[in-house]
Amino acid sequence: MNLKQLREESGIKAYKIAEKLDISRVQFSNIENGKYKLDKLKIEKLSELYGKSVNEIEMACEVTRCERRRNNI
Image (tube, rainbow, N blue to C red; front, side, top):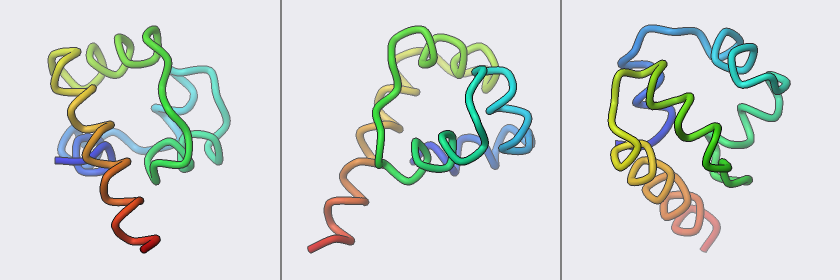
């Protein structure tokens, strides 16, 4: 499961997550698309928001990055 799928599963709109992370909606979109990595604090915050473990969020980040690499090839 990637980051976008986790968010959609949570039912929280992207702009709300961006607000909670104190970043712009565009920045959050770039994170969901694998363009930027999340720092540890943002991973922990997403863990709380999505009700998932930090490990699950980190795995979703990795899936997102792998998908981006695969699509760019």
